[in-house]
Length: 182
Image (cartoon, rainbow, N blue to C red; front, top):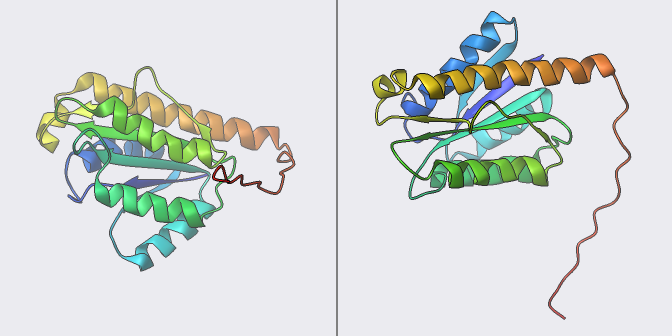
């Protein structure tokens, strides 16, 4: 089992990275191969991310809140990733880091990548968010960190269950696109 965690923050080792480390520690304790991948504006990194996402069983998207939405970096990177990667029926989860507000809007934005890509979205006991302005402040958000630990265990459970079921993927249809401007 492999899970890739995408850090959509321009600060490679900031609050969002600290949130992902909480999940990675649970994956490590459960023997799940995982990697935190820092997003950039480099097209070569998006190509690498496509290969990682297609090889993974689970995908975590994360971003800090900037003006009540994901960062421009996260949006750019995830748009590129999801326009190229084949991730149908893989397991996904969104993680948001914020100082105060805007978490639910950003959480919603990130989850839309999963739903439009026919992915299975996993939740936790609350919205997958941590609060703080520094990684040290994130350490004080006991509820947020607990939410991420539960999320990590839930991802492993869902992926394990899907692997045990060993079902064939449902039939797909050729995509139809309607132009509403006539």
